[in-house]
Length: 336
Image 1 (cartoon, rainbow, N blue to C red):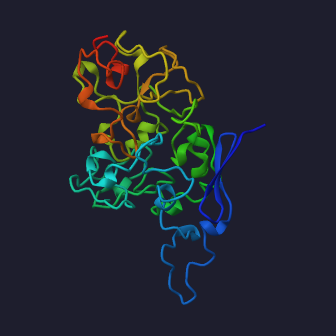
Image 2: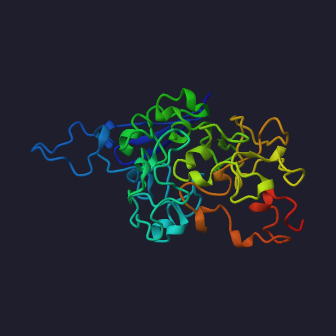
Image 3: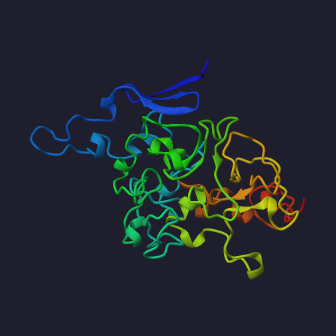
């Protein structure tokens, strides 16, 4: 019998239901939608949005003030994507400044790091219209990560996603709707598990050795951070930034001897299946470095959205930091 999990959201009875591994919204439609966008006098209702939504934005359900929807502003037990909690306190270095946060504007950066004016992303889209003009970062759409990138409105870009939420091994090439895609990231391939970092299961990020596949999680990051993406600078020429979409099992000898999956340093794989084992072979590409191997997408308690304390990464260390963070992959650089 399939496991059924129900989490009550809001007093009206809206729920996120997991049947097997899929999360989908059920409950009273009125909790999210309104039949008419006006108040009867021709005035648009406050908070009314695309798809007849009467909630103002994604944050209305995914913040600590809401019910059972996954939280994106938690301080503890955070989700795989990280948390906006710290950046919302006012430190711009700790997360992405999405438009819905109280402290939503970045006072330091005027454009995304690694973003070139007029740049075309690997998926062929032009984030921010190809030029950055202080447009706020949104959760979805043309200026966001989730949903359909060719649609400007983040609500419209996610249309139908919460009703058709698929799970398991998801192939971006066959995802007709955002809900059929990995984590609502249309165009991205991966394995989606509802217990990631909360139980024994975990997501699998998709990565391929050498890049060139627009379905990888790193290709998504490259929509705005294109100059940080890929592995075109070879070791012989000197690295000018950390490579992504590089298979460690076929690179540079015995330093990279990863043999087990680590949720705190998640490596990508060309095989998107539920597996806690990382096979160390040159052919399976189970040890692919991605952007999210080191960073959390939403934010973290560390500068640059890092997953660990970078100042603890000291070459030759035999402290508790040995074997963690950078040293999980660079196994010969600590003191153990």
